[in-house]
Image (cartoon, rainbow, N blue to C red; front, side, top):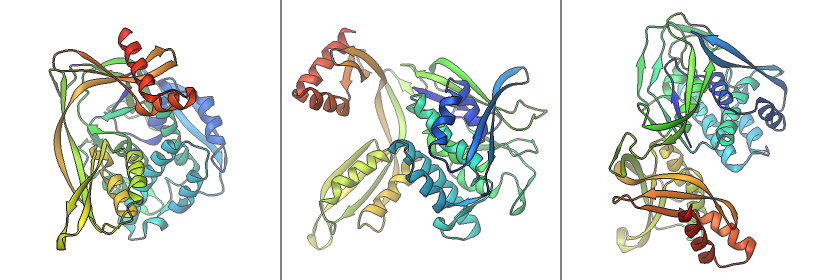
Length: 394
């Protein structure tokens, strides 16, 4: 499923949470899930308000919390020790890492010691962790966002009076297409910037898609010139979406690579698993000969642009490499969608693609087939062939 974030009035954590709840996430489920992992008593208030005649969800986090701010290490500890799934944990940690990197750059302190003020309170943690939980709840596999509008003026915070957009917000938005509006208001908060730059694969006009639901999340203030809303459009990409020609899509992705000749080969398998968790499309080990004719391995990773930094950090922290190369490449991919089909094994997710001649291809997911084969104690190829045959019959 696809979510298109239409940020015509900016983005913040509470706006994001409101829009996703408006799409159908149960606020009671969200509260119960968050209460199990967060170290504070709080409540989530969800109300429906009207902005320029448009109904939207307004989310407020009500809490009694003796800690008004936390540092990066404290927040990492809360998330890592929680019962969240590994995918949700990793995404939450990546969002907070973006915030920590921005604070570290601006204030000249180590990232681990970056101290969050406005974004370290329980309300901001609820916004970030809650957003990732909502995306997982809605089974959103792809996020695309519009270009990001920025307001002007000044804002008061614990550091004093800061220009808008705030230094943290602007630092997080490096490399992202933005434009200015003549509105003296903080349209994009650091939390909102960190969320959207982490979850969105690209920033562009709305692609051709089949719209199923629309969610609106309301910001704190009622602006005079434009409705202070975030709109999230939920649906599926169509075969002839923007960027597709015939039955293939042309897109720009990133290659990250380095060569290694001094690492324990047992580490490569672990590295590949972690790179896929970080969002890599593909990971390759390529035999190479390095200086002094030493045999080595080129680590080459193909990933979306918004996962580049996560992939680079993984390689530099998990290997003996001291540096990487990265560059943009163009690729063409077949039109594809993920669907659920009824099989003798129950409902199973498969990938359906259309080739250049309009023929349909069915590709069962390996991990799904593997689990079924182990559970049923039957050959993997039997599971694969059975699902393919029954999916085509559908």
